[in-house]
Length: 168
Image 1 (cartoon, rainbow, N blue to C red):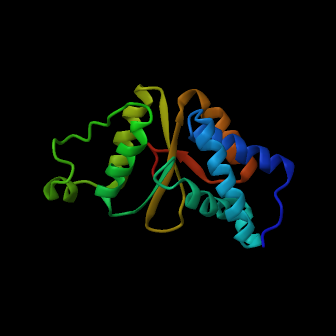
Image 2 (tube, rainbow, N blue to C red; image 1 turned 90 degrees about the vertical axis):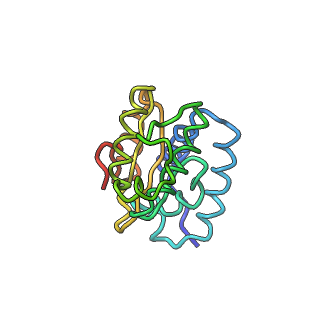
């Protein structure tokens, strides 16, 4: 069973969920409840720094965040399209058929992340990614006006994150 998070960490986690859910209070509260449950099952080592992101990932995957294999361009596109629906945005992936094998073979998740990040910035959003320590990409979207808050949260929680224009 994991140790309880200190007050500053709890506040940073709450603010994190608020930012990635783009003000959707119901989804924020639901994910916070799921996070608390997941934290109860986590090992003590999973409640600090980058390890905390693995607990968060389980809660937000495909609802408020993404986690895809480093070679799975199709899943990345599908997940980002789903995340962008919340903001009524569409990413121009540079093809009419994102499922086309020739297209998928000619690109990478890192390239697609940079493309999506640039388009989201124009619309007032930031695509973030975190260091998974392996051959996978993970992250979330926030409003660009919240960039400084997200960086402060990352510092408080000791998370290694950066904007999607700089994929790990």
